[in-house]
Image (cartoon, rainbow, N blue to C red; front, top):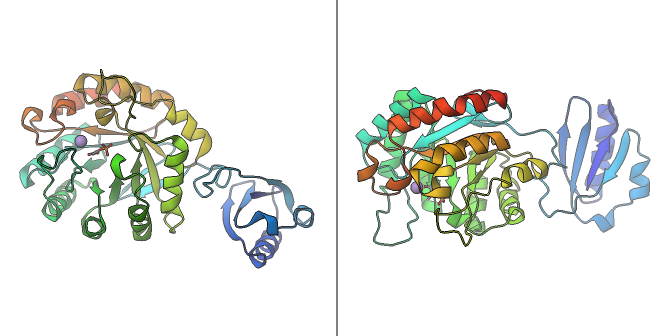
Length: 337
Ligand code: PEP
Ligand code: MN
């Protein structure tokens, strides 16, 4: 349930409402816009006297929030969120490009890729140090050593960094070296891990689960936010369907659906969505046209020799072309990058 205050409601009337609902056992979430203030309530609705509340000074109306996610809900927080990551942010007027290799492979590689993606317009460098691979015999990542290489690349270029975490141990390590934590598709409903990243307070990129509905995804975001960490960004990376021409099927409709339901920024990853290099640029364009706040793109210095996801990784030249080709789409969407 949210309480919508009348435009220009006084601070005293807002406080009066908050005190009243708090005394009745509710947690509140305040969202102050330029005109209207919204007070979100979390708690047992049956304990509330609606008729009483409706006539409080400054109260305009009461709106039911039937969805189980509240803090991630746009009804609680109508203004789109802006999430700070290192010295950049992900949010409404920016188009954030996160790019880099699937996995951190060595020190030189991270440095070379960071310089190349920065030159083309990326502001965040990605690289997995803990890789959740389908086969236990595939490269599993360099662990903490890989995170150190990411930090070095960040210090040399000024780019912010993102890396995936898969366990408590990796959360503790990543929190020392990177600016943003990634929860991968395979862990979207690892609720224990979601709470752990929630407790760090660091920005989190929450990828959509392999076969998760949008509702499940938003509830996963709620797990992180309800630990006191509002810095969540959602990443559509394709879902399982019957189609085999691409690795997954990019659910581009998730972008406008999310924009309607949540204030959290939305990023699209056309690399993991398709698994095919040549489809990455057209889908990057469609993501921006649909309203995405950013892109995650896999880029490698030598894709043919990549230790993971080489087939979907762009060369430096291809990545530079992508950034040139998407520029008109960013301009049409009034986003800068
Ligand atoms: C990744 O970004 O490296 C990754 C493993 O992606 P996903 O979790 O979307 O499969
Ligand atoms: Mn990958």
